Image (tube, rainbow, N blue to C red; front, side, top):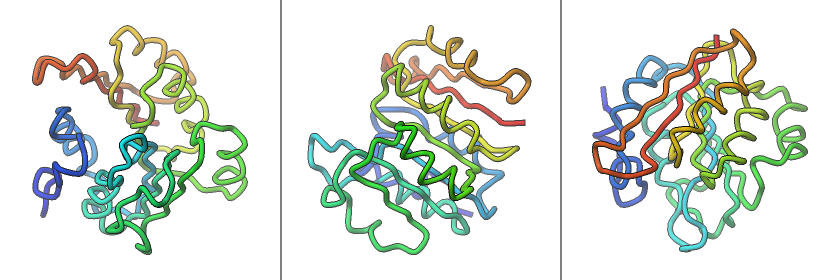
Length: 193
């Protein structure tokens, strides 16, 4: 049984290099590894740097062998690593604003697509993180997990928790700043009831 640490390519994602998230992801997601999940991650790279984006999408593809992986980003498809293009279980939605209500409605709500795991690794602004909770929480199946990473201010956590409908979820805030002394090594995990 492969663990995330065994699968990750540290040259293609910062989840274990700049940040210290791999152990947390393993702990939080291991019980869903072999389920038939719908997994969605917003933010698959750094379009401004024109890199081979998609390292974390490849990681989820390898870790969840029975799951469909949705990858959303503002970057153009030409900026996405060829290794994750044309994979049957990967749905690449590029050149889009993943926080746009019309996009969410026509792409997911109108098609009744729900998710078991939602990850926000987008622009890391308070506004985008709030929009993630507001617009995507309703798309999360009961028992599903929503994760926001790279939170730059620990004081934002309570504001995010206040956006969740009362008694609809339990939350876990994870402060990993002490490991690599990064100011934004903070995660919020939301477990939908």
